[in-house]
Image (tube, rainbow, N blue to C red; front, side, top):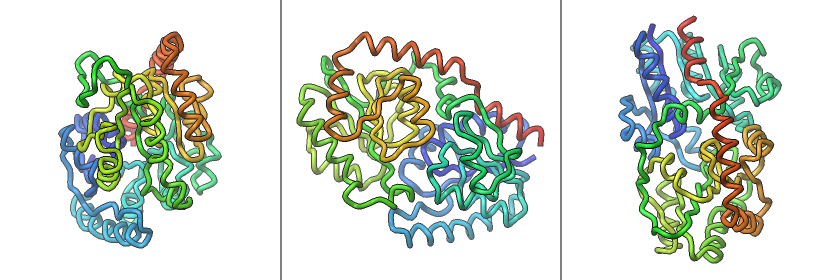
Length: 351
């Protein structure tokens, strides 16, 4: 059997790395991706070989549409020659469209029903949808998939790689000043369709927060992780040497394990930090199922505005006993979770 795997984001590369290894034991695996800074860097770093077809398209809706259409055509050329039996993606619109058009069984993995634009383009085309158990079935059936075509795994997605990590051998790649506490900030996915629907004014909240953190935490290391070259250039220009801005992709696990607070404006790294037992603050615009679950478990705090983020962060930095409680809760939860990669592989092999 030949399995086609399409990788679009850094999170997907981390998740699919063990899946590709497992599938390769008994199957031929075709890997595709796209030209996109973080994905290219992490795939190179993790030694994941693949065909880089098409590009992201950026934040302009017209360019996103054209880039997607062009990628579909290029993928169709490649995939029609390769003739895979199954397509696997994290709801890749191009992968789903090509699989549907060429009559290839289409398996999707996703934990983001709040990403409505992508869900509307992909969920109706899924033969099987894999998702964390905390997401209600109705969150997916409203997009047009039958409940009996949904497989739930008892895990959050970062469990796929966190369960496989030898943490004792991972060393931070980001140099910080010793003796200072460290705050890590992950900027938002500002080119994502579900954030482009909001106002331009709100799109600056990441920079507003960093300016406030620089003012209030001058005695701390502040590490800001950008997603795009444009973000990184703006951070380096506006904040000079007041914050640490890695210009290359970094191994997130040792960085998180050695920081004192994580502030996330997205989903994956927020869940990753929470499951590692790092005091975690979500400054994501809106809300989503995974975030609400982690808040209920006491692993994530959700302030309402920049000033509240600062207040919460000061409390967390001053409370060492709370950090120990959070770490114990996280370890217990992660240990209880199953391996989503094994669930998906078992389903594929049974096809």
